[in-house]
Image 1 (cartoon, rainbow, N blue to C red):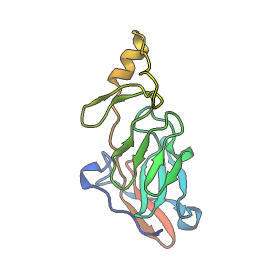
Image 2: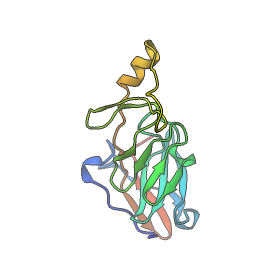
Image 3: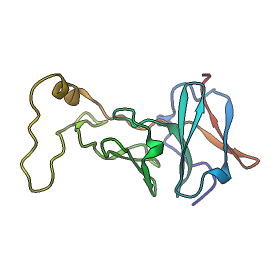
Image 4: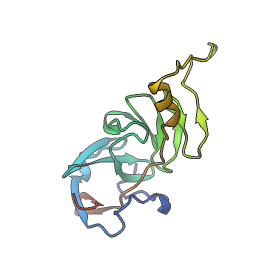
Length: 160
């Protein structure tokens, strides 16, 4: 595991982060290899993760239904959401596994509600919940630039 900032796809920069000031969040020593930590600045909750590709900073919310990813699990670069078991690649910003509730992936393809292998597809009774599931888009992750200064993780965050 590296204690350097990870590279991220430039087109996935979080809105407002390009010209934002860097803010000190946590000591590098507080983020062990494979670790997830939440840092809060104003009303912005940031997930810091120490992946094999380096340290990343994103919003601490699942791009599906906003559950805190900081209480999920990290396996290499892939973080698992604790709510609907969606899995997201912190090194690329892409979904790896759609949440069990289904929905629309970032490319616009619909995925049905998850069913166990070998069983019939789950029925999704008509109604507002089914409509909401069909309209819920799983987004790509958005990143905040990270730097390490004097043993501290800093991220460029928009003003709170």
